Image (cartoon, rainbow, N blue to C red; front, top):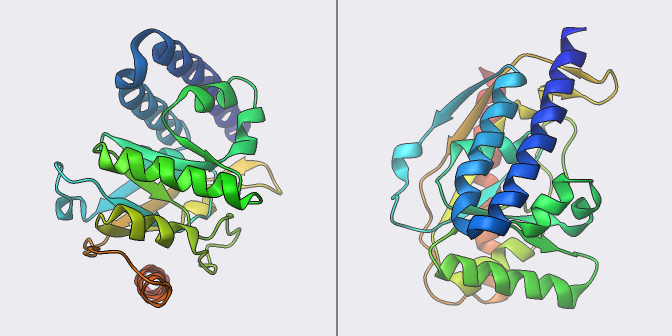
Length: 236
């Protein structure tokens, strides 16, 4: 019963805060988004009973913009990253999420960046938009696996994130979310009190345009960092 009550609260705050975001964006523009999105993320984490530990925040320069590359295991990854990272971040999300009532409208009005992976031309437009946002001072969060893992295992990375890295020439920061996949069980529809760790690794310098070989090497390097973190946490 307690789990269903928490799901109801999460749904309520998602709808309510999404409406606030949409209104705020219409009336005040982008400057209202960071504050309101963090408010939503805080509500989700609190009502999900997530015990969040953030490691490595001191490695980030608040005056720098980054490309955050994170593993993806849960619907809770987005609020965890909005809450845990800097005040001015953008995410690339599947455009189909805009179909969700109210929440989708808020996404559409937000400075987040939709992507249609099935259409190479539109996907490239999204990458160019992300480069513009980074050059304007925002940081970008990307889930390079392209889909969520349902067991916490790290999947293969897709190239798009590293094409963006090559174009933007900003430091890349590997992000590891540990045990976020345990928060919600889609089979039982239950939310489970979970300790989640968000690990921020040392930024990786990224200067100069990368050719295909260099992109692939960078992709393997970031994948190895995140995989090593997951293995270390699993062995504890």
